[in-house]
Length: 479
Picture 1 (cartoon, rainbow, N blue to C red):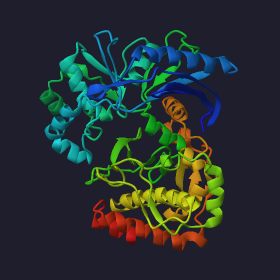
Picture 2 (spheres, rainbow, N blue to C red):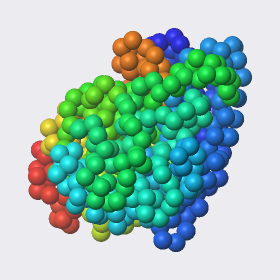
Picture 3 (cartoon, rainbow, N blue to C red):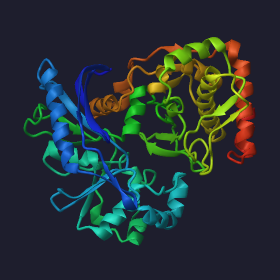
Picture 4 (cartoon, rainbow, N blue to C red):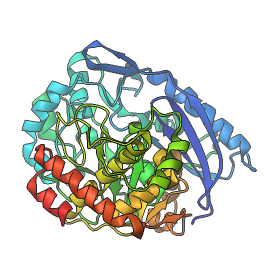
């Protein structure tokens, strides 16, 4: 690991967090809150972008003040933010609109048209255009506001640090329509939507140097490099250790997310997975489920239930613990609903079945990767709040048949700090991440493997019988 001090900034929906990192170790962190987005009729979801810089400046000042050199030793900084949040700006780069958040739906009709205008391009990328893609919101801004330019959150913050406009990174630009395979904005799509070329920022690879700080600001020294970051999800993936081809991380938070690295682009004909581009030119396929930790989040006795479920052993019932209607990964079906096959003996068995059900979903996601020809290196990395449960991690290892290594540090801000260091390190990101700390390894349980395989196959059979997964995926899962 590199010994320089770098700072990563995570601009999330509810707040900002900064990490100062050296040699893979977190030296200090700081956080500040942001005003909640205003969500209203017509699919509006907005935040005041003028709140971003004061919060960022506050956490930077706090972090640098806690360092031995009070910030003078910081060599680089990078920013990660929510994917798809944009703001309309004037010719000077100042906001003239609220920030349209990642879940704002005012661009849905434009996105539907964009899907047709760029059908061949999206097919080559193996992805589609979702109703909430930022691409459509750019077209909405062009038609309904006086904005002459569009910026993502990191460009707004980086411009404050450098004192001049900066390029977007291709990670934050992906949902705005940027084509990372061709290395260009889809001009034919934007032309068809009436968006002038001048509205779109130039785009560079993550870890590219965007500029440097000319005068000290928020505790950062003059000469400190400002480096292009990545979206929060990608930065979190890198922080977990999924940095090189074959490495994947299963992030079990409120929902489940699987992300990893492949040498080449893996188009997904089913459209449930899409790929960001790695700073070194590799690809970052991934998908996000609607199922996950929220399946057990309503219980105030999780530790007690975990202990009882561990002693009980595998459940005899099979659960798909989806709490809402519709699933998006590893299969997409708008009418999918949770189910329980059989009658649980008690709440302990139901709890265990729910834990197993999320593990089955993870295994199905891995089987989906396998049918696309993707190899997953062992161990599978694990992150997110659900990975703090020893029982759940053990179940996941047994169901997947892979050892699970729980990442000790999978925070977005930590990943952004790694990207910052890569911008000024020979060898780039791979060199920065070489030898980064890894967590404990959990192996599959041989005593429970047969029962878990039988329940997983029963789970997949039910999904197929309901028409939610196709015969090809079922065959891979049953094999």
